[in-house]
Length: 340
Image 1 (cartoon, rainbow, N blue to C red):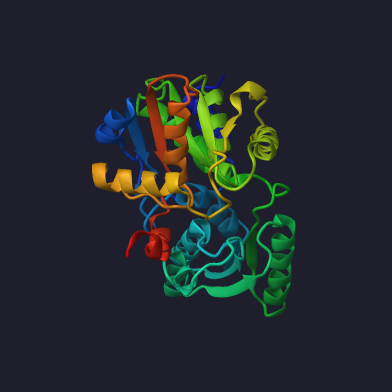
Image 2: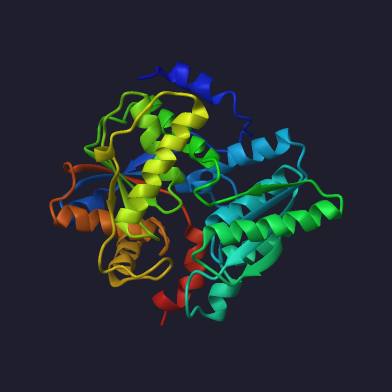
C-alpha cells in the first residue's frame, strides 16, 4: 500500500502534459437509480475538457508528454472509425503543436454513410488529421504494424513521429491516467462510499488504471468492468496481463488478486459498436431521466450492464458508482437508430 504522495512520486518519472479539467464531479443519478432500486452516482469523466471530453484525455496526458520528451512532431494512432481515442489524440496533438495521422479500422459491419462521416470522424477532419483506412478490425498487432509502416514513410520525409500503439504488447502508458483518476477519487473522499464501481472495459487502460490505482492506495472497493469488445474470459486475461505490466512499468511490487478482476458481458449484446435493445434503453433512460448523454459503444453498454448485474443480484451492494467515460460524439453517427 502506498500513500498518495508516494504514488504521485512514482508517477512523476513519466512525462505528462496538463490537460484534464480535474477533478471531475461525482453526481447523483437519483432518477435512474430510483427506477432501478439503486443508490446510483456517476463520475463525470465526460467533462474532462478537451474536444468534448472523455476518458482518453486522462490517458493522452501521458502519451503526449512522452511524445514531447522524445522531440516528436507528429502523433500516429489507430482505432475504430468512431474512435474516441483517435478524436481526442487529434485534438491534443494540435494543442501541442503537432501533426496527427490517424488510422481508422473497420470494426463494425454494415455501417451507414452517416457512421463514416459524422460524430468522431467529422471531428477528426476538423482537427486536420491525415486519415488512413485499415480493412481489418480485430487484429491489433496488424493495425500497429500498419502504423509502423506509416511512421517509416513519415520518417523518410524528415518527420519525427510518435506511435500510440493499442496492442497488449505495447506498454500501458495510458493506464497511468487512470491511476491518477483513482487518486482523484480518493482525494474527493468518496472512493469507499460505494459498494461497487462500474466502468467500461475495452482496451482495458481505464479499467486497469483505476483498479491498480485503488489497490495501490489500499482501497478495496470492487471494480466491475463491462466488456464492450471481447468475451469476458478473453478480457480477463488481458486485464490481468496489463495489471502486471503496470506494476513492472511503475516499479511498484503490487499484485492485484485475480478475484479483483471482475468482468461481465451481457449475452444479449452484439459485437463492438453494435447497439442492443438494452443499450438503447439505457441511453434513452439516462437522457430522459437525468439529461445525461451516453454513447452506444461504451457508456450506454456500461450502464446497461450495470442495470443487468443489479437485476441478477451480481453487484456487491446497492451503492454504485457508474464511471462515465464520455464518447458522446459517436451518438451523432447512430442518429438513424434514435430518430424516425
